[in-house]
Length: 113
Image (tube, rainbow, N blue to C red):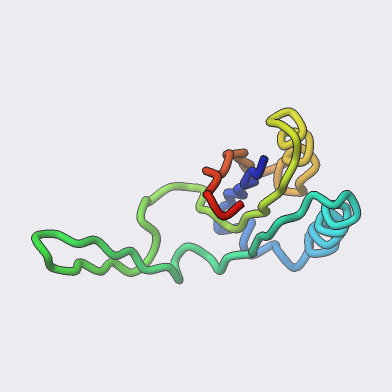
């Protein structure tokens, strides 16, 4: 089953990324070596995002994050593991788990899988 490991970071965490790059590289390599990685991406800081909504057929655009919160989505890993316990084990190994918030969420399977 596929799970997303979603990493939420503060603005300070985004600024400190260069100092934890080696830890993320090692974590990524461990996912590869275990054969569980199915995708993922590092995101730019939340202020670079754009939110779009349709209201009465009209597009409403807002620069920056959707929610004004302390932590913003900073990246994700997609893993393919047997169950939630295995996904939580991998999430606990993520470098962000020690200081930020890491969420594990199952992906909806599609007919093509």
